[in-house]
Structures are given as C-alpha cells and as structure tokens.
Image (cartoon, rainbow, N blue to C red):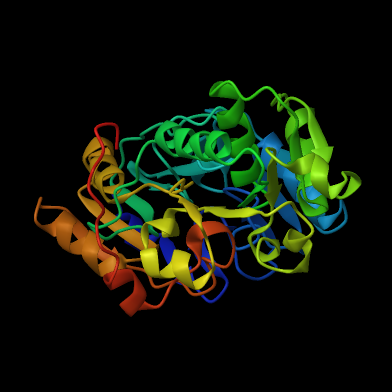
Length: 357
C-alpha cells in the first residue's frame, strides 16, 4: 500500500495528485482542478476543467464569470464517488462557507483527505463538517495557537443586539467578507430574532443573491445607499471590512463600528482598525476544534497547508501523530486566512472564558 506522500506532491502550482492527474485548489491555471471552495485564494480563474460542489461552481461563476470559472465545469454531489485516473475521489462538506468541501482520495488502499478551510460550529448557511477517517489528513491552521478559542456565535450576536438596544440612536455597521461571513451574520441575526430589514453595502448584494438562489433564506435585505442618513439610526448595516472606517461609513448616523472576524480576539488588531465593537465570529476552526478534528479523523499523519503550522504539529506530535508543514505559498489572501504578523498573533491575550465560549 503506497503512502500518500508517494502520490500526493507539492508542486509550484499547488497540491498535485499524480495518479489522478489533477490539482487541488491550484494556485495557477492547470488542466484539471478540484476546488474546495470559492474564496479567491482557493478558487483561481483559468483552469481547463474544474470539479467542485454545485454551490461552489455557482459562486465561482458569479464572482469570475462563466468563461473564467473553468472551461469544463463538473458538479459532484456529496459522497458521490468518481474514478479519476487511478484514484477514487469524493467530496464531503467542510462547514466553511456555502459549498465548501473536503476532497477525499483513495489510491491502492491508502486514503488522503484535503480539508480545504473548515470550521466545526453549526452554520445555518452551509452544511456541517463531516470527519473522514484517513491515513493522511491535510489541514489548515489559521487559528492554530492556544490563545484562539472562539466564543459561540450566539454569544457574539447577543453582544451586537445588546449594543443596538443600548444605543438606539446610532447605526451599527459591521465589517464582514462578501462570501460566507455576510450571509452567516444575516442568518445568525435571524435565528436570534432580528426580523427587521438588514442593510447592505452594495459590494455584498450580489453574493446574497447567489445564496438565495441556492436555497439559503436571508429575509428582507435593503441597500444602505438608498436610505436617508437619519433613517438608519438603530439599524444594522453590513459592509466590507475596508468600508467600515472610510468615507462610506461616515454617511451613517453616528456609527458604532464593528468587525466580525476570528482575529478580533487580538485586541491590538481591533484597536488599530478603530473597531468599537469587535465580534469574534470566525469561519475557521479554533485551536481546540483543530485538535479535536485531528483526533476524530484518526490519521496517523497530518500535513498542514497554511497558518500556524509549528504549533499544531507540536500538539499533534504530543499525541503520537506525525506532522509535516507543506508551506504552500498563496493561500490566506481572502477572508480570515490573512496571515497577521507573528508578533501580533503571539501577543494575543486570552480573554476570560464565558460559560458558553
């Protein structure tokens, strides 16, 4: 039985399955690509053939255009097994954003799973992560430091709604990424009982339409630019992170500036961005969830693609799991996967745990 390291290789284009003749989330245009999800650091334009979940392909077409999302596009259902070259391949949900997938591969009795980006808490806008037993598990490590233990999303949404109630004459503007975080915030607000309209920056509207077309109900959404300044007092406005501190946000009524990100655990980052109400809501697994996932999949070996590789490899080794840092360059350019300066991450001080953290 060949070890996955003999058939799953790191090339300049990305992770390459040799007996299948395909790349996973390639960084450059290739002949055959399997794409785990549609964030731009994983889904690049220009591939000849693209295999992905139906939702990921829909998002790719919306973001890139039909002609750049893959010359040949093939959607595959969850758990549907295909034979590509000499490799059996299937996708299982990763719980990151709509359509996000893990790629499972079997070759001559050995199995490797590439998780893409993932989280382990429930998300009303996408299917939950499903652990797959394997010989090698390829994982991200965005928040792989012990200081990163995320509170529950419900706790953070309650903090937002408490602030809205406390400051009814101010507009709460929340920075969030267009794909995944925006729609998740909307759904979490709906679950918490916020049935009023949610106002959107124009850059967030198109992706909400894609989610709705894929069956994710978001309730009443309105364009923020169409509202008079005074009418947004007491309302919640969602905008890209880059817009919350520029001229666009200043048109709002005495805005309470907020940002939803796992990096809001780092107080320095919140202060440097002028964030009054940091919300620790992440679409990536935290330290405890990363380690629990390694235990659940039961792989004797873990490969780490990007993030805090050393810390996770050290923690895995303490439990008898071999670790390897792939050091792939090019991931982490969108969403929370951005790589903060090491000193900033190391300075993140753990906040006191709440009973529901």
